[in-house]
Image (cartoon, rainbow, N blue to C red):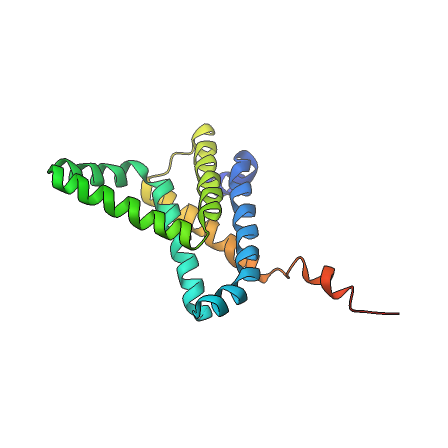
Amino acid sequence: MPILRLLSLPVRAPLLTVLFLVAVVLGNHWQVVQPTFTSLYGVSSAWFWGLVLLQAEVVVVFCTMPDLLLRQVSMLMASSRVMTLVVTLLVVITSGIYLLKLNVLTDVLILASALLLARLDLIRIGVLPGARTCLFLMSAVVTGGIVAGTLLPNPTANLFAGGLITT
């Protein structure tokens, strides 16, 4: 019956379904924004989607494995005060410039919130996979949602095109 438990997971943990829907909406949003972004910054669409998926995977790794990740960073920072200062400045400056310059703070926060809520929902129902299994599960849900969102049409295309037709 393990396959039945796996198939009933979206019903038992509804926030996992919400995570998938959030990824669908973000994928559709990025599909709509992609032509403007690529023309404004002079980036090819392949680079755009590579960076978007990299950003999503970094959020997934940070939200699904915070204990392992923070333990390693803490051990690095505990080695000396200079390392503490260097790591703190590097993280704050790099993430601050990235999040503010590209206007992706809202996307990152929405995805991170949905991921953390999905993890809490899995813990609530007693499904405690290992860190790597959880990472692969969440990565599959988020990437599948983003791909599904890119396949959806532009939601505002019909609003503007309807005004061009005269009878």
